[in-house]
Image 1 (tube, rainbow, N blue to C red):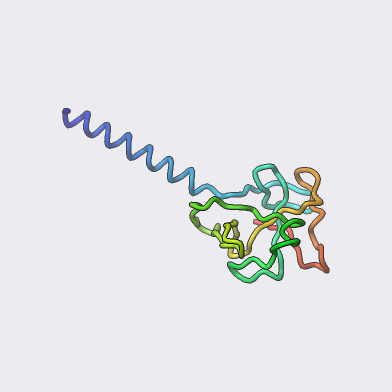
Image 2: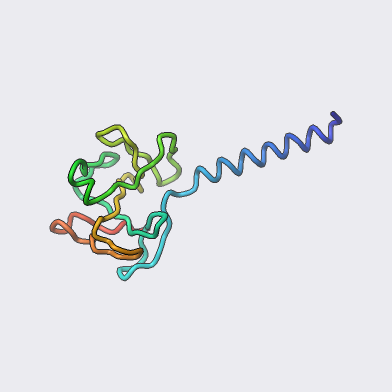
Length: 130
């Protein structure tokens, strides 16, 4: 193989690898407008929330709580990137956190953009804001 073909092959492989790494490093949530302002939402547009009883990097919402407040799950091989981190749950599964705060949806939000969970449980639940 000539030097120019070898260089082209290496360059193409490098670009492909960089593109794959960038795709994995993409944030697990996006910002959307809600009636209460900008908020993080999941891939389906459902509002994400944080819980005051969580400690940095640790979810306190397990069992029945997680039925009402489903965690924003991460794949087993998910990697932290910037303000986005991965938290191990009590059952060994993984979920996403933003700035150390685990993220959840709310089962009573019926459609994208609903914010029914904001202020729930005497104000312990909050919309995740950018």
